[in-house]
Each structure stands twice: as structure tokens, then as C-alpha cells.
Length: 241
Image 1 (cartoon, rainbow, N blue to C red):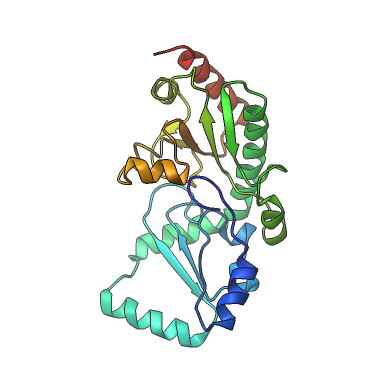
Image 2 (cartoon, rainbow, N blue to C red):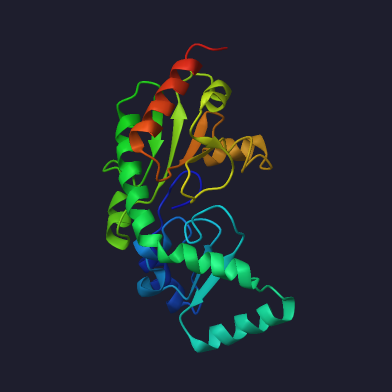
């Protein structure tokens, strides 16, 4: 899914079209991880991961991964890596291997929590719109279901105009306001003023990234605690000018 509006691309169809025209297909699989989606099996040539996120899982390293479907591509990328020096330190490599060992267990909990939080948001009048490919009414829900074993743990939503976005974000106590995602702790961000702030307003609006849009990376904490935190922050933000 795309960031932050969670739009889904049909990887298999794109890869087939690319192969017919001798074009490489590159997929960023950070949000899904190999546990939920395997783009190489769907026809992709190159898969990239921000391993800082779910693969590491503990927000304590900066790393990236590139996975390819042929020895030729592997040799070409290894040459670039060797020439530029883009190599993880031994300790960061150890941290990443440690994180991958618990990937499946963590992703199961991430998904379980996200489904429950999404259900909470669906019933809440403070929320105008939700962007989550696990919902049956999502435009690409059928594609997501076909190519992945789950919809991930990122959910974006738009606050109703009667709720103050800044007050909501600053009233959260358990969920942390930060740009990253994919760690064991829940992180929330405001794309218009954080991750996508450099994009001109007119283009942001054209893309659908509104000022009331919020992105939540759901962690593995007790889900009742997370929902309670969202509830109290929404209550604090209601009617605030």
C-alpha cells in the first residue's frame, strides 16, 4: 500500500506488463513485510525494504534491504554496494537478524490490534474517512486479499472538522507522535506537517493528503489501552478551535 493513503497496486498485473516491455519491476514491500506479501513470487524483479521498520521492529537501527530474482541483478547491485560503501555495521546487522527472528509473532499482534482499532474508528463519529485496505469497502480490497496475507498495521484516517487535529495529537499519552513506523510501539503522524510537509499545498490537496489526515502505525501494546488513549484524545480535541 502507498503512504499515507493506503492505495494498493496489482503487482502481478504490473509485473506482467513490465516483462512484456522489458522493464524491471521494483516493489517497496516495507509496509507488508515478507511475512504478509512476497512480491518476487508475484513477478517483481527487485524488492526493497526499509528494514528500520518492521524487519528490525524495535526502532533502534537504520537499515535497508534489496532482494532480487536473479544472480545477474544481484551481481550488479553488489557492485554498486561495494563501490559506494553502503554496508551495515556488524552490530546493526546483529540487531536486524534479532528483529527478523520475531517478525511473524510481532506481525500477528500488529494485525490483530489494527483490525480492532479499525473497527473502533469505523464506529466513531469523530472520524470522517478511513484508509485501510483490510476494509471490505476499500477500492482495492480485492487486490489486497489476492496478493497478501493481511492488510498490514498502518491505518490512516481523517478527523471530522469539529475536532482539532493538533489538540488530538498532543493529547495522546500512550501513542507517540513521530514520523517513523513499524516498531513495537504505536506511532502517529500528521502527514501534511511532517512526512509530506515539503510537498506544495496544491499538490498535496490534489493527491488527497488533507490537513485533517492522520496516519497511525499500530504497535503491539494492549489494544484496549490503545483504544482508550484514542478515545481520551478525541474527547480532548472535540470543539477546540
